[in-house]
Image (cartoon, rainbow, N blue to C red; front, side, top):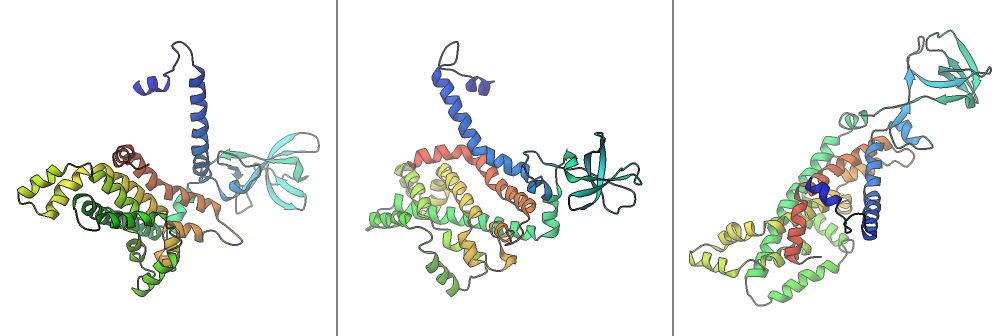
Length: 349
């Protein structure tokens, strides 16, 4: 009820104020622009290959109805045929020669008639092609691609949180010579596009022998200037008195970092975790240059390999795209409340 009262809240007492109308219109347009393509993608992933290619396209997964006819090994497509006398009958198409089609009555296979293809309309039915998803695990090594993506995302996120939080702890709670230049040098790397350093990264990975290895995708990206900056700004808000009190109790620096600073930085760590999951899961360029063997492909590379030069299996491609969206969506849904808290506390916009 509170959510409904919030949605129906108006600025005017009795009727909608013009600002309410403009706000609702703006929100509806934004909702449509953001979610309409995703909704179309999800619905299209349940279409058959023929339904995806039909024109004009339909929003729901309609496909042509088929019927088993005696004397034919495979089900035949069903049509509403208009005969020469003007009557209409449901008939199956047995064969087609040019613009003429041979139609057969499913109930009486001996009853056949030849009509122009313009005299028949396909009979469609709402049909969800669940095989688009089930075939992925049977026809393709989808499980291997999924495991590679999950392994890279989980390990890279854990290492990113550890490395960036240690750097942020040192830059926020220690006073040493060159502290600010080091921090500015880290922040300055934000202005370098990742594509600029792609060749040096490839050469280093090649020298250490991590080509066609999942660690070759994980290790180059675990230290991020965004993560160091976000966590440092949040750790600056942690009172130094807590750390001084821990040192007076003879706590080691590692114990202070692990037992005091990290738990208090949970909102900022959650934000960085969300960003890291999105970066690693959707990463395409770095895996493309590091991984060239199909058994090491991530889901993003597998999606790219599905696009052939002459033929693309769009029904499988759309189903796999929906599956790749699920982890990021779930992570964002469960941790989205930490985003505003962490970003507001860290002062990041």
